[in-house]
Image (cartoon, rainbow, N blue to C red; front, side, top):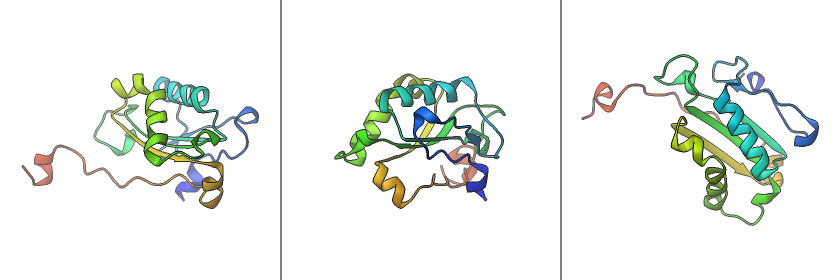
Length: 137
């Protein structure tokens, strides 16, 4: 079901437009999301870029752009460890991560890895609130 909600983007970046979806399945595209998309496209020239705003599943005001999940498929990741790939993504998004973005789940894959499993993972539900409201101190 989530797969149907998310716009699939598997053709080369230069020939496609990708509308992302938020966690509720509605079309998304605020300024933070647009900046994330532009910076990742510029820095990594991805073959696939899937971006989901998951803020709606967290204890934040409606319309927030604070929690994202991204799948980036790029040949630039060839020969790199997962940590090195994440560092590249973090470097491209350093401004957003220092400011409005609170959480970023990253799937950074090579084209061959994406062909083996071409889907954006699903985040677990938010527990919400602070630790105190979850029964721990």
